[in-house]
Each structure stands twice: as C-alpha cells, then as structure tokens.
Image 1 (cartoon, helix red, strand yellow):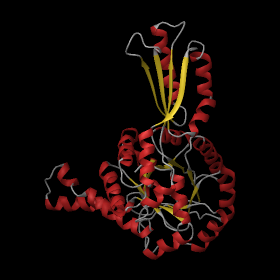
Image 2: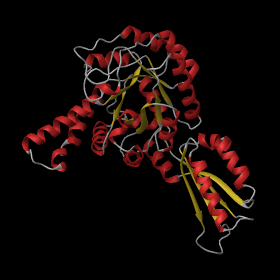
Image 3: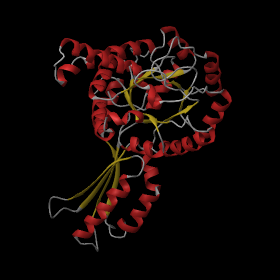
Length: 402
C-alpha cells in the first residue's frame, strides 16, 4: 500500500472516533517493529522521527530507509517530523520525505509561538504538507525521554487554542491536559473537561504527547473528546531496553547482534498493544479508500544550450542544483547529458517534488525565478517541460481501493 496523505488519515480517525498511533523510531529495529505490528493489526500508522532524538541517528541517512519501508508496507503509512524546532527543520524534513511536520514552540511566549507556527504553516501548505502545532507545554518527568522536555506543565486554554488555530492555520493541535513525556509519577490526572471544550471549539484532530502510562479508560476518554493521534516513545524504549538487559543476563559476554536480538519483537509487541488501545486495528482498508496517496511529482526539462561551452553548462548545473535543491518541497535535483551525440535534446533537469502543490510554489519561489530568469532561460530557448506522476504507483493505489 502507498504512503498516504497524513491529513486525510487523521481526519478519518477524528471522524470515526479512534486514534492513529505515532511511534517515534530511533533505529531500524524500531522501524521494522512498528511496521510489523501495524501490519499484524491491519492498522494505519505514523512513523515519527523526533528532532529531539537526532543525536541518536543521522536523520539524512535514516530517512531513505524509513521511506522505503513505508512504501513497501501492507498498510497505509505517513511519515512525520516530531518536535521540529523551527522553519529550517521543517523544510529539511519535507525535502527528505516527511509528509507531515510538527513545529514545537510551546515553550516560548504565545506571540512567538504564533509567529513561528504561522511561518511553518505557510511554507508547508505550499508543499501540500499538513502541520501539527502545540499549545500549552507537556513536560518530561521520568524515563529516557524526560530530559529532553524540561520545565513545568502549562495547560492549554480554550481561548488561546481558538486564537492559535485561527491565526496559524495548523491542521492538528497538540494539547496539554495533564500527560507528560516519559513516565508519570503516580496516576495520570487528565483534564477531560478542558479537552472536551477545546474539541468543541476547534473541530480539528487533536494530538496527545506522552501516551506511555495511560490506562485503557483514559484512552477511551481521550478519543471520545477529539484526540486522533497519540504519540509514543518511552514505552517502546523501555521494551527495547528490557529485551537487551535480558540478553545481557543470559549472555554477559555477548556481542552487539546477540544483545539486540529480540528488540524488534519487543517493540512490535508494545506497538500492537497501543494500536489496539487506540482503536485503529482493522482500519487499514477503509483508510486507504478515503486517503489520497502521497506520490512525488517529477518535473522534467529537456533542452539545448546556446552560448555556453561545456564548462559553462556544468557551472550552470552546479549552481542550479544548489539553488533549486534548497527550495521547500524539492526532494531531489538531477542534471544530465544525453548519451548519444545525435540526440535531439542534449541536456536534462529532473526535479522531484514531494507533492503536486509544489508545482506552483516552486514556480513562484524567488530562488527559482532568479535562477531561471538570469541563468537558465537566456541560454536554453529550445526546451520541453513536463510535470508527471508515476503511473504504476497510481495503478497500485487504485487496485488497493478495488
């Protein structure tokens, strides 16, 4: 099944009263365990990569594996940047394959949170990518993830939530109603009345950070009051850690592979438990039927050059790869030269966009306008341009709906 539009996935969850699981991953063992559980449950799933975890892996290197695993999955998948710090982080995540981004300025003054979130929304929506914002502050208390979220809890208010959503245009809102990152000390006390009022005021999918440690009854109350996405990490890290400690106990002198053996299964078991609690099990087919696929667009130009020698053409291509590759929504820029000397067109550009929306935003972006008008068009008058989408992926999606 293909990657799907994350906005469609969460709208479906919100409308049908269940929560999609967003599981933070930090390694291939986590990635494979999460997808194995989602496939066993026939559940849509969100693969989440938190900027606060980037010290544990190279985001640029891991993303191709995440995208490849998502595209071959047997259930609908979205890829999400969790706790993105700023506009630069969001652009980087989109250009590397995320189909949803979170901007987390919840620890900043309200006006600054508005400003930063508004900037990210404008950029991301021009790329067809939905945005999750956060209002109120969800701190860390205990456990591996707690140290990344210092400070005291700040509850989301209905009045600020309404203003925040109206002025930023976020697609989903992470709210603070009593959960924490990491492990709770004692029984979590959640403010359901506050959540109900926020849900009634906004009518958009709500998000809970800090899903670890919540009871079955708490899950039901959260979902009944508009929560369509629940984030998990600490419970997965604890399951992985327990598996490793068990291996150490059985084989204290074991090497790396023997010590991490079973981590994938331990993560999968915890993910499956969370998926079933959230109510998304068995919904893969209906989600696929109602969600648009997340498919890249190929922007192809074939052209000939007048007035430049070979070195000049290469310099123009180098400049273009740098300038165009930094535009939001541009996944890849490839330049090429025809193999046969008698080809009708000598050179090519292949620019991969993450979404059809980028066709327009790319065309109007200042970096593209400057390069095209000053460096490319004056020497490439003889050219053909086409924007196309892969046919086979589209066919596979239609077959999935049949």
